[in-house]
Image (cartoon, rainbow, N blue to C red):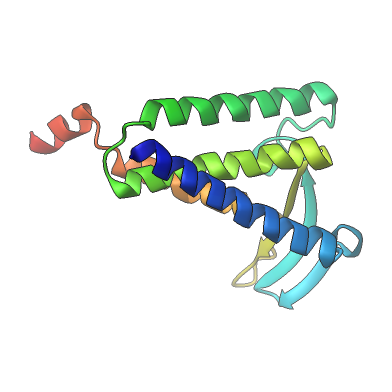
Length: 162
């Protein structure tokens, strides 16, 4: 049943995200250490609190912004589940579950910490990336790519046949 698979994947992504954040932010105390070099300069744990959307845009730290972003996240998650509840195809169902699970992970952060906990930092080739992200962001990104390329809607099928 598609809805069961979507919700199972979402719950798994949420659980993985929570475990990684508890381990990194709290147990490793990244919230106070700010930086832990794992494999410099390529991989660093770098604490960041994102009060806005992507790259901190529209982050004012106000309660209105927090609740607005929580509401948007919940609305998108619910709409995706309703829209794809009968989705055919394993990969499409996995993609929806990844987006929803990642969104719920970031929503949980906003409700718990007041901002999204970002801690993964990847740099390469002489470029020092100032931004951090988290496992929920990775799941959302992969899920959205899957939704774009794996959607088997009638319009896409018609275009492929033409």
